[in-house]
Image 1: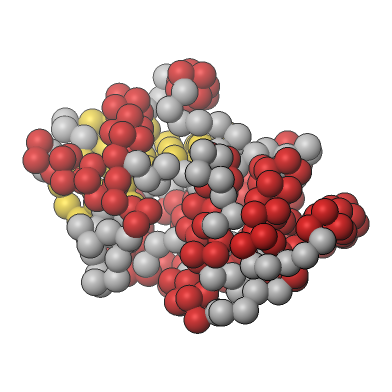
Image 2 (image 1 turned 135 degrees about the vertical axis):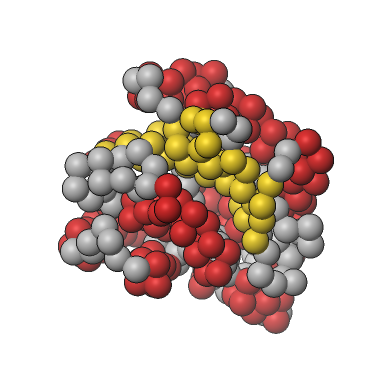
Length: 324
């Protein structure tokens, strides 16, 4: 399912969450973050919500956070929009979800195998324009083209041997780093996205690990919190004494989270290595205010460079080079 095409009004979606239900709130934040800005503007124009919209919302939350969270969200969603016979609608949504789950899994693998063929056909020395076009079409890009082009060229000039990405989302940026890194690079990515029953053999993992070209290796730390000591120790073990040449931080978007990711993982970065942050624009969107605050604080004490190409809220990339 392409969540960017769901036709739900943003304010109505937020009504699905209980004020103290962090799982559903996090799910909604993720759903909103995966929507292109053009699609978000369309959401605001929608005034009529249908039972199909409720099913879509139910399936998304169920897939991300389980049946209990989805049921709670859907009941609120239905009540807020005047639907009757809520119990039956939830039951039918669950029945449809079970059947659709099997079908979607099959379709997901069919799509994954097509993506595998396309990804493996792409050489490492591909131009940025072709790499960005493929990543955006196949996986979706969360960064603006001109901003990520600037960072891509900085990374490619360095040809990093070790890349660490915090916050993978769809994996589009990780694909770019595989084409900018050294032929024998080790690329590691941390994300809270659930690993799924099949682990590294899930359709998502299969495609992302196939980004590796030549003798590159890609390690996905899924269902992992970058701020936990367990994750830090796993990274240390996987590095096997090597230093990180490029660290890309695109985590939970809170000021505290950005600071903690920097303080936790910057000691792994080699002298002269690059550390980049996304969504540093001082004209922030609601969900990027924490990173904007972090960047204001960070630039007071550190020499940095940045690229912000438009007045659209959010976005922007900042770069810090480790001393030495």
